[in-house]
Length: 197
Image (cartoon, rainbow, N blue to C red; front, side):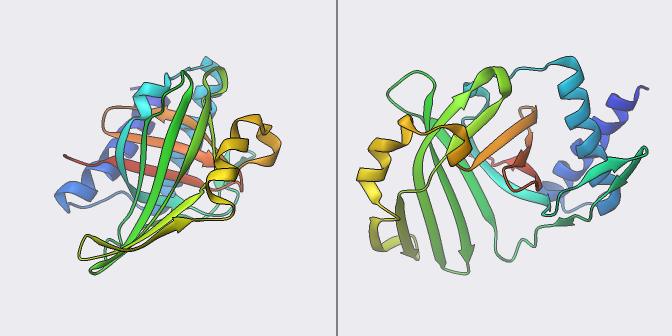
């Protein structure tokens, strides 16, 4: 078994544990596996199409600080996201090629907060830049507030003119049918698991 195979096994196991509530790998193993997958993606110049991100994904694990290797040792702490307040991210197609929409939501009991906005994918870098321009608050799945967020539709229209240096982004380094993994602009790592529809 290669290092990449064992890395993917750890990530598969972590993702499966969210669905099956089974034993899960230790957090430090998951951080190391994420770093190894990121390194392998760069070395192999892996490219994922935008369409492979479409769907709804539940946040499973995150390493919010800038995790990295130092002298071959994985540094950085991570944790499994408590499922008491599930967080989801969704990507879906827009009208134009290479463009998409993104929704990020978190739920606290019967209350849900949703942020939505435009996204643009730079496929050679597996980089998805995005911005949130609309907010919606739902109670028992019914909208109790919906409106513009930080500039709303005006900012939405300007988004596609922005450079990557001015927008938040995710750099995806592992994309499968069951999970996706990325590093965010702030340096954190995240592992999301595909939601069953």
